Length: 222
Image (cartoon, rainbow, N blue to C red; front, side, top):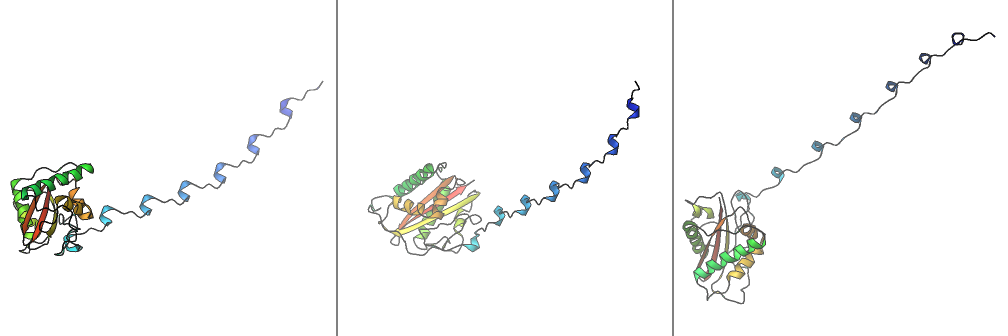
């Protein structure tokens, strides 16, 4: 019988079939998709936050907002009237030294409660500076000194990197250290000074004259 060999059969090779290569298909690459990069999102950097410099100081009542270092925190121009109500226990029975010791103790209790390191005892120079400021505020209740200089001029000759001041004044014999600390802690600015971890020591001054009790905290940090 005659046989048909494979060579007598026409073949269609793969090369005769049209093919669609991947290059003929439209593709959408990632570069065609709109992307939002971090640089397209508005950012707020620390330098974009408004800062309060000494010249931009807001005003407030004396017992509510303290001054701090001129470059970091706003300062206030207090009035001459105390705004606090006297506490039931008067301060007449406490000596100046007892006032200072109690204010120091209560200040560190507040720091301890907030998880902040306690303040160290002040140097003799810092304690003397606080005493000067306490005497000044019983006659001129301001963070500006009677001679017109900034309150921190009293720290001349004392080495420090940052400093802050809290002041308070009330009728003589009508208030307690607990009351004063309570008033300071009720004020955002005063509380910020008391709890500031950058401060490592505080000089406290207390004075009674001109019918007033005056108390000053001079904080410094190195």
